[in-house]
Image (cartoon, rainbow, N blue to C red; front, side, top):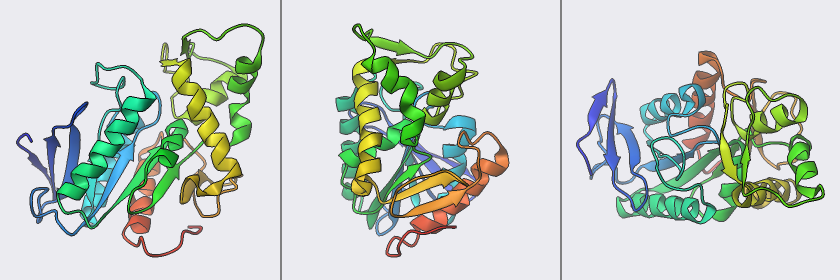
Length: 264
């Protein structure tokens, strides 16, 4: 564990893990170790093309807001993203999530929620936290048609799939619903062997809502999830009002884990 720093009413520090360190933000009056015992923790999983700060800093904003509500917020780079020099590998991501859950339990968390954005919402079905699994802007099945059509076309897939700069049409829609700023990605590369099961995981969630507990979707979006929160239309969280709003929306929902999900 490294030394932490204080930001307003919160305390943040890095915590070592097997693959990539955790960035842990807790209420200033009860720092992560050991006073964080008996509090709910929330793990934030970024979307493809993001890192632990989140697109337009949505994770950083949400972590501070969550800590203000008394939660312990945890962020980290999935292997292959952000500061990570590792590979984009589904098995490694599973290990990172398991390690983070184990860290929370080891430090006396009352329970743990997991929030995952975009296409990485598919990772939620692969973990078993004590709290809620919340999919933040998961792609609706109809927005995955570009990938499905390419995957089923004649000929083998390349080992890696690259989002071209300023893609158009269905490709742009696909990458944006995955969670990437399609006009900025300019070379975001994801192994096909990793992207394929993520797409399948989202499709499975459409058929089996129990893949996650709550879905946060833009107003007007069609999601068959049995429990959902409805927020602004911009699933890329471009604006400060978007990221601040989603931070408060999630935090209010997370501090009442015993309730049932619903529309907000």
